[in-house]
Structures are given as structure tokens and as C-alpha cells.
Amino acid sequence: MADNSIPSFKAADLVIQLTSTPKAKSDTAAFGVIFTDHMLTIEWSADGGWQAPLIKPFENLSLHPACSSLHYAIQLYEGLKAYRGDDDRLRIFRPMLNMDRMSKSAKRACLPAFNQSELLECIRRLVEIDQDWVPHSDAASLYIRPTYISTEPSLGLKTPTRALLYVILCRAGHYFNNTGEALSLWTDPKYTRAWKGGTGDCKMGGNYGSTLSGQYEAVDHGCEQVLWLYGEDHQITEAGTMNIFLHWINEYGEEELATPPLDGIILPGVTRHSVLELTRKWGEFKVSERHLTMSQLCSALKQQRVKELFGSGTACMICPIGHVVYQGEDLYIPCQVKNSQLTARIAKELTDIQYGRQPSDWTFLV
Ligand code: COI
View 1 (tube, rainbow, N blue to C red):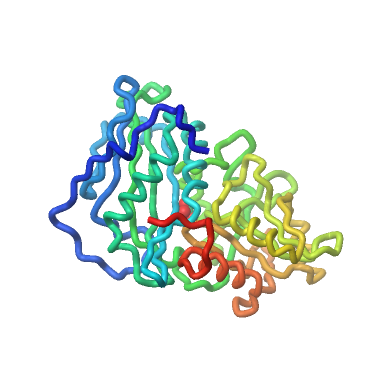
View 2 (view 1 turned 180 degrees about the horizontal axis):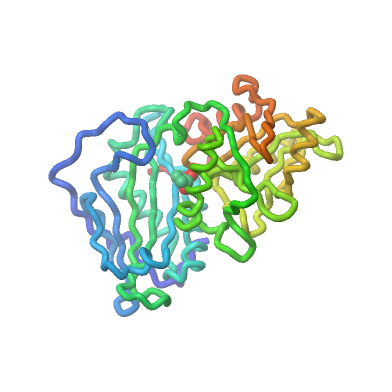
């Protein structure tokens, strides 16, 4: 919830400097490669507090070499998207959930609090200014990347006395190179994405960068992503950079859509939250936040109780999973993409909302 008592910058103080050299807009659908003409920056210091927010031409940052975000990873980020609807209006999907998660990550990173509604209004203005960059396509969108870093210019590990909150925008097509094909996952319990008491439930860059070597080992084993396990009982936690859902007939014979609970090691994904809300509203089967282990998945597969397995995330949206390699064994999930009834239905309902085909209070008009 936005808290008006927090000392914060104000969107009303925005200073806007427009570029005199707008870039040619490329049609590339590649994720996160082409950035728009402008960026938002907001500086904070212990002495001066928050400065006026600034929208200015997109440019490199200049950082002190001792900057503690570079040395100690005192930083965080968010990811959300703006969509151009069939009515040509621009909608951002559930941005207050991102603002809220960003505030929680900031608290964990000892970065100063800010007013969430003021930040959202600054982001709205930025998207409005760069609105021509939002693709005219329902297979692409504009990815919004708020980033918040310590700019503390000293090597002592301490609460930052300087910080920079900035937002950049880029075109986003399919996150994975395939075009909606089912993903393959490799598991090895020697890698852990997050642990109890850690920061896995916050959106901090270190949670992602540290997964890369496991990711490349997955590729060496012929898979695309890692299925992250946790604990002696090999709990299923996340898949690549996504939350994970299992649609199955559970051990009690009930049809269930299950995802691991927010017990500190799971990122509280906006898409995850939306899938839970959407399917609970349908009321057609049990929807649970519960622990799931590899042995439960393996026996359900043997007994043909698994219907579908899929990942969810902002960048990838909803992504069916077709193959898991576990302890050297190939587990095939019965989800030929064409027959992935639930995955396809959820993806359609979410995109209908995002592109304004289905009116919803989950969208925020730019
Ligand atoms: C997102 O889905 O927005 C993420 O943060 C994942 C990132 C690696 C692109």
C-alpha cells in the first residue's frame, strides 16, 4: 500500500528534458535489446533526501568505481509491461503489485523507502512520452525495468548514503527463443536458487546472476532451464526465472492446480498471483499454494495423474514445460503444446486483459 507519510519524491516535481535526436524504431521482437529514447532517474542522498524526478534522454550512467551496488550487490529491480490494445490505448498490467514488491525489496536492501503511487505516476509519464515505442502487436509489449541501486561511493559495507532509482524501457517479444514450445528443465540439487532467511522472495539482481552457471550446465545437458529444488526432500520451487504450477490429480484424487507457497524462497510473482486469482475465480478445481516434491511429481507421472506443468513470469508470461531431467532420468510431462488446455486458457484470459479485450481493474491506463 502507498504510504503518504513516507518522505518521497513527487511526480508533480518531474523535470522533463526531451531528446532532440529520437532513434529509429526497430521492429525487433528480441527481449531487452532495444531501448527507448528516454529514461527516468531519481536521486537520493542522506543529506539532501529525494531530488526531483527527471525524465531525460536515455544515456549511460556515471558511477563511482567504489559504488556499493557494484561491489556488494546493493540493488534491486522490477519488471512490468505496457501493452497496446486493439483500441490503441496503452495499459500497464497490475503495476501497484510491482510497486509494492519493489518497496519490500528496497527494505531488504536497506535502500530508502519511496511513495509507490508517486513512482507509478512518474513511470506513467515516461511511458506516455515514449508511447510510440509500444509495439502495435499482440505478440509484443514494452517492458518496463525499474532499477534501484546504491550509489554509495565507499567500500565499507553499510547502509547507503546515496542511491539512484531509475527506469528504462525496452521492446519485449518472446522471452525464450522458441515461440511458445514446451520448455525442458534440468535439475540438480547441488544448485539452490534461494534458501530460508535469504533474499529469494525479493527481486534482487544477485538472485538471478548467481543462477547463470547452473543455467549453462542445464544447456550442456540438452535442457533450456533449471528446475530449482530445495531441501533434502527435493522440493520443487521455481523454473528458470519463473514461478511454477502443476495441474494434476493430487494424492487424494482431487483435480488441483498447485504452486509452491510464499514461504520465503519463492518470488511473489505478479503473474503467479494473477493465475491463482483467475483460477480460484473459475471455481472449477482446487487451487493450492503447497509444497510439491520431486517424488510426488515422479509418482504422479507414473500413475498418469499429471495434466500439465507450466511456468509463469512477467517476461515469459505462461510457458508450458514438457520435459524434466531428474537424477539422469527423462520425465516427460503430458503436455503436447496443442493439448495444453489449461496453459492456453490461462494465457488467453491474461492476454485478453492485458490487451484490453476483456475489461478489468487489473490494468492501469497510461
Ligand atoms: C521477469 O520475468 O520480469 C524477470 O525479471 C526475469 C528476468 C531475467 C527477465
